[in-house]
Image (tube, rainbow, N blue to C red):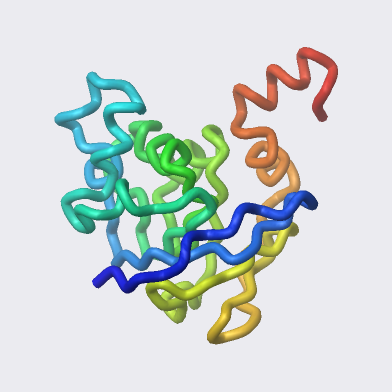
Length: 179
C-alpha cells in the first residue's frame, strides 16, 4: 500500500513548496486516529509516533518533512483535541488536502500552523504522486493531473501558517517582527 518513493525535497529558499509526496487516506479520518487517546498524557512527542497508526502503521515512521496528506471528506471529525493537528505538524506534514474538514479541526490546524487546502477533486491525487503547493493557497500542481484548484485560503490564515501557528505569530507581532 505504500509504494517506494524518493525522499521529499526540502522547500526552496523562496518559501515555495515543491515536490511533496502524497500520502492517501480515505474519508472520515477522525481525531482519535490522528492523536490516539491512549497517548494523550505523553505530550506531542509521545503522541506523534502513533499518528494514524490504526490505519497506516508505517506512516509516522516513514513520512518525510514536506509530505502532504490527501484524504476524503470529513477529515478531522471527532473531538476538539488540538493534538490531532499538532501531531501532523510535529511529523513535518506540509499540508492536508481534502474536500471537507470538521470545523474545529480546521481552526485547530491553522492555529498550530498546518495548512489545509479544501479541494473538491482531492481524491484524484494518487498515493506516492508528487505535488507542488501554490504559495497563494489557491491550488496545487500535480505530476499526473496538472493544476488542481482549491478554495481560496484567506491571507490571514496563510500568514498564520507561515509564522508557524497563532502563538508564534502573536509572539512575532509582540516582538515587532510580524504583521
